Image 1 (tube, rainbow, N blue to C red):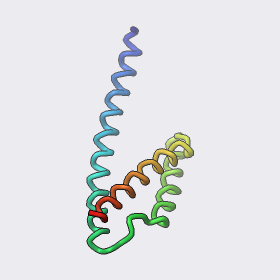
Image 2: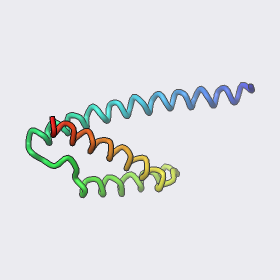
Image 3: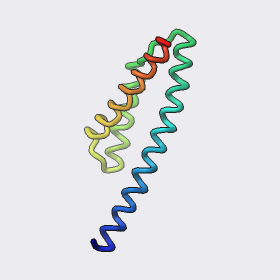
Amino acid sequence: MSESLEQYRQSIDNIDAALIYMLAERFKVTQAVGRHKAEHALPPADPGREERQIARLRQLAADAQLDPVFAEKFLRFIIDEVIRHHQQIREG
């Protein structure tokens, strides 16, 4: 294997690790949000917030030269998982 390919792969591995740690931090915060919503009898989902977030992140993706459709699919997956967690917290 070439040295260049190995360097690319090391960079990818580092980025993947950073993504995992960032997702873990995001989910720690969303778990706290879920507990807050449950304590205050708020619904697990907030469609207005979700749409604003998707629009904002689609624009960020476009600015970063990342496919906005891909970014939306990725974010939608995360949002759906967060809502599922919020429902579980609410059901207790």
